[in-house]
Image (tube, rainbow, N blue to C red; front, side, top):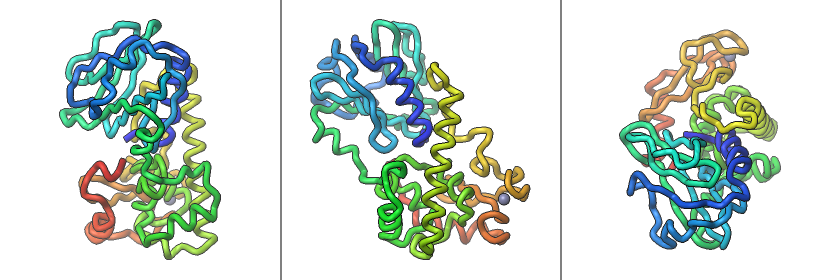
Length: 294
Ligand SMILES: [Zn+2]
């Protein structure tokens, strides 16, 4: 699932490509994509893009007349910038947003179509997409601490819970925990004030570094290599490979068809955690529905 760094570079690119431009029309290839009925999509034909923003992991295209297109890419949804009038690719194509100077194409690989599009009118309607999570760049340590310790969660779940923090998913939570040198199953209420500060810095530094890195990679173009598995990540998606800090092989915990990666030497005091017991621990702290990870 595209997370804060990926969403940030998408927003940068959208601002550059469609900011101030007029949307000609929206072509829908999949009727299941659109999850709203009023106003109808045709209502925004010919309106100007006044800005772009995000609500959690959702991308918001702001239009004149206080209307908002809200795109959730879920796991496999991606945006592409193509020549004006490009036909929507079969199988993976969901929709095309046509502008005079180019077309924004929304695709989703795989057979399970989960990506969604809403068109809403007014700030209040837009508010329904706000899950309440804190933006780590806009919060101070005290607020971060109290939000994190409100409930006694595993660190893995606390970081990825959209009601606690904003825009962090499976990939960057692994990276943040490795940087902070905490076990994914350590509980939030067991952290000392110093440890909380370490986690807070690790979250901000890790996300900031990745945003800068992805910005450099994308340059003036459009992000076309959005993935949860990036070369240069310390542990995420690197099971069995050497930890870049200590060279010990990266470990994994599998739970609910997911995997979290960690370095035993850096994060658990060298202890190899039993996969099954850990999996149970994480699973118990993990939502049943994918939607709760949004
Ligand atoms: Zn290590």
